[in-house]
Amino acid sequence: MSFVQRTHWCGEIRRGHVGEEVTLNGWVHRIRDLGGLFFVDLRDRTGLVQLMLAPEVKGQMDLRSETVLSVTGIVEPRASANVNAKLPTGEVEVKATGLTVLNDCGVLPFPVSDEDQMLRVNEELRVKHRYLDLRRPSMYKRLALRAAAVGKLRRYLDERGFVEVETPIFTKSTPEGARDYLVPYRLEPGHFYALPQSPQQYKQLLMVAGVERYYQIAKCFRDEAQRADRQPEFTQLDLEMSFVTQEDVLSLVEGMTLSVVNELIEEFSLEKDPVAPFTRLSYDESMRLYGNDKPDLRFGLPLFDVTEAVAGSGFGVFRSAVEAGGKVRGVRYPGGGSLSRKEVGEVEEFCKGFGAKGMAWVSVGTEAVEGAVDLGDGRFLRGSAAKALSPDEAKAILAAAAAEPGDLVCLVADSWAVTCDVLSRLRLHVGDRCGLRDRRKLHFAFVLDFPLVDWNEEEQRWDPTHHPFTSPKFEDLVYLDTDPGRIRADCYDVVCNGVEWASGSIRIHRPDVQARMFQLIGVGEEEQRSRFGHILDAFSFGAPPHGGIAPGIDRMIMFLTDDENIREVIAFPKLGGGFDPMMEAPSDIDARQWDEMGLMVRPAPVKA
Ligand code: ASP
Image 1 (tube, rainbow, N blue to C red):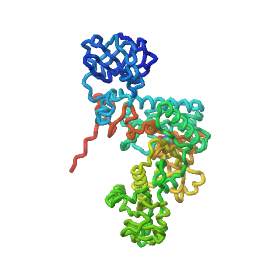
Image 2: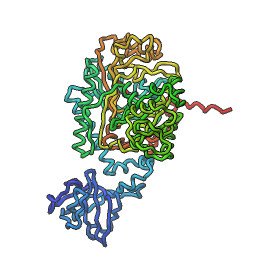
Image 3: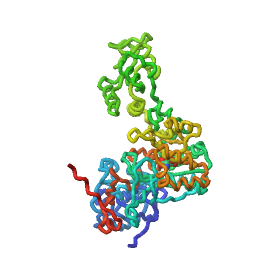
Image 4: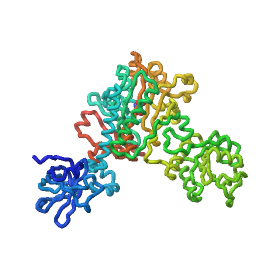
């Protein structure tokens, strides 16, 4: 079909074009009929411009929303009363002289042109018709932002001597702690490729190959429980460097992130303010101060520990937790002293919901209200623990919490792990309730010195905290036989606003150390050969010291767009369970394919 192609984009028409003849191609965003005179907002990916269609130009054409048009017309100024200050093209309109319908549009499943209404449309319906959903300017902006981010990351690394290398998708299992996606191999039924959970082994093999600086915009595949910030396939900026220290990798990532994020903020007018330099804290500090390894540092309110001060307390809940080897830790709730009993009860229920047996609380004031305990220094204590605590214990708690009159001090007495989990969540909850999680701020931090391995109680074995290729800290190798849990790794995460954004490490590059690591995590010699023989062999041929990291591209876009749902920043996402309602994938295969692949489904076990 031949048609008149655009001379201009819709979003670029301005006062300076007045009097010019222009041709535009795009979609009918909205149409209004003002007594036979039709006004159409025409949309292309750059924005909207208003068309004025006289009845003789429109004729009998059916111009419902999302019809595709080619329009020629003259740019005219709008009368001042009709100027639309919200639109960059709002001072002008195009008086159409010629109009062609390039394609009609059927009944839409949802109102593409109404962003407010679209917020209420069922997500499955949106994803089923993603090609329509993506027509929305807000969705196109996400795609454009993502493309720009990737382009800038590439440029930054190219300028620093990195080489982009593509690594295979059909490969062998490479462990990152998730289940693999498997692809049956037709030529040898019963054999499978695994899709890469990350290009980890390939990038290390590229270092053995002497590439020295590698990166890739890499698709990773992990069959694990889906969450708002997880997809079965996602994208990482995977990178690796040879002859580097941890410090070299950290400074590269910090420089790259700030440079790229600042350019994007400028180009896309994002209301974001990255905090520089990145905060640094050790894993131990992070657990102690924030209760998890991905702290939201946009606000303070560190956790505090009063285990020692209350070890012999008359308050039985505290004393018995300490006697059982547990901890008494807490978090301050600024201004929470004014919560009603019922509201404090809700805070306690919140803690119980995450496994706490209860939550003790005190609040401090300067007035002798009924039931308050006089601390003898002009302060009066109320709360569930107030009467049972000695004045010294109470003062120690208030000092540790840095509590001011009017604050609520929340305390949990339990195992270290439970206090970490519950209080880290409570801290975020308090941060939300007090409006402390400033959407404008991007607070990046490096979390360093992770433990090398974690004890897996269920399986009764050590699991790698990051992955099995992470190097232990040389000085901690003395604990290898006696106390592996004490070994720290040359391992680092980057977190942003309470979300893990990147993980990386200096790697093991000696075959003997790698074999020792496999042994520690219960991979015996035979399995080492069958699963990882290639990497052990490669390390025996002069592997250089190396290390790297892999920031998540999807999550980077989420920080910049404030999306809490990763699916919003992925063009064609999967829904719960990994289902794509648009392509209807995964789907059955035909009988011939079952046969060729040598596959059959095991019948479901018969229930007794
Ligand atoms: N492969 C690691 C991951 O996906 C990243 C790295 O260690 O570089 O978490």
